Amino acid sequence: MSDEALAFLRELEAADETLSAAEAELAELGAEVERVRLRAAELEEFLSRLPVERERLRTEQAGAEQQAARALRAKNEASESLADAERGRSADAVAEARRAVIRTQDALRMADRHVSELGEESAALEDTAAEAICEAAELERRARRFAAEFGQHPRLTEQDASDPPPGLAGIVEWGSAARAALFVARGGLSSEREAVIRQANELGSMLLGEPLLAAKPATVLRRVEELKAARA
Image (cartoon, rainbow, N blue to C red):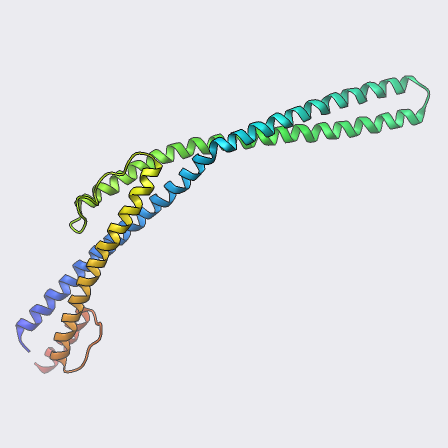
């Protein structure tokens, strides 16, 4: 068992570790880019619906305020009717007037609650919109940072490192292109690793005298070194 064979196995082990680390790096970068792309798509959809949602709430609020105004008038009229009934001598009329007051008070509370709920919903929508705008700016910064990382990676081309166009739609477009570029780069690394592993297994099979299938170069090297030590 020659020292040259062991040295070559060590080279294959180092190559496999380097390629594996590069694959993991690209996988992590790809996951980050995909998270940015998906979030940008979500925010783009939300902001595109925002004018419609605002108009819906304005319409509903106007209707609710009108309903509350009608309920207030009805409650005031019922209170006046009760006062008139109490000046008369009919107990039945007083009882009926009091029931009317209770009904109109309940209707007014419900109408006021609806107005309040719509106001809260509108405020929450505006808060979400403000947060979305701030987050969109942060996503643009993150996308540019990832594009810069692309430019520093030897497996990615200069075209892959181009900055994303401005806006959320630009991030989504860039993210799709970046995902494709990363897929190609990782495919190249995977092919190289397969070639390295195949060489290690072929050499290991020859040295060990037994077939090896898809064993990592580190595993092949360890077994060969153990065999050499046993024969020493």
